[in-house]
Length: 277
Ligand SMILES: [Zn+2]
Image 1 (tube, rainbow, N blue to C red):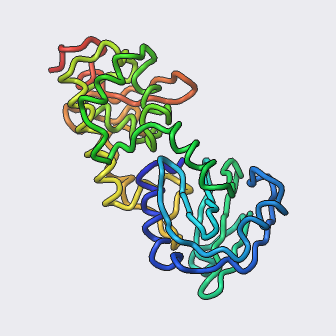
Image 2: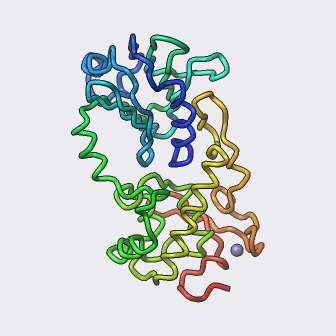
Image 3: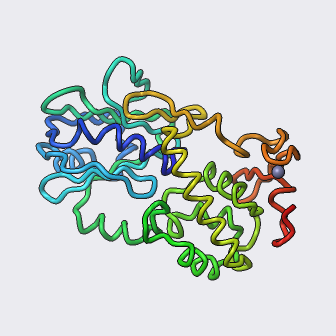
């Protein structure tokens, strides 16, 4: 599932070409990816110009003229790509014909992704419900520690909650916890200021380097041009159950809770705090 680094990479790939383009025609091939009737969706967007191409959490946020915002959540397998042969779109769901250049295609094999056209005010409300951007200057270690102190759900689940921190999914939650030396089932409330600082630093480092590597492609993720990301070979624990920890060679454990697999090193990430080797 695309997380902050993947969505950021897509947005950066779209921005230079998409900004200033006009939507001339919209073809909805699979209406189930829309949160509104196709007629309403098209009426809100047709003739509008892309003013800016942004990201908020895991959402692609396209601000259009006329105070309309097109929000794209890629779900599990969604892609927003230029309609060029090399993008190899296999399951196009929505096609936007622009006034110049290639069309923009929303492609989605499993169709868990969603597109919605809404007013700026509606988007502002949704935006408010999302947690801080982990790479922004307002996301500080102090703020993280204060937010952690209010929760007893396992830290890995806490990190996946978009109302706590926006943009983090299962891959980078696991990666950051390993880097910080924190067990995925630790209670956020039990964390010391020092641990919060470590987690803060680990989250930012993990996400930043994944953005530099253009995201993690395990299977479906592609950037706006249809290219896979290069971060998969850098993963320290995610998907590496039974393989040796890169830091201490202990076998990585895989543990399922909250319906998702967690990966961690039992030596580098002991359950009890303050016992790290
Ligand atoms: Zn280890």
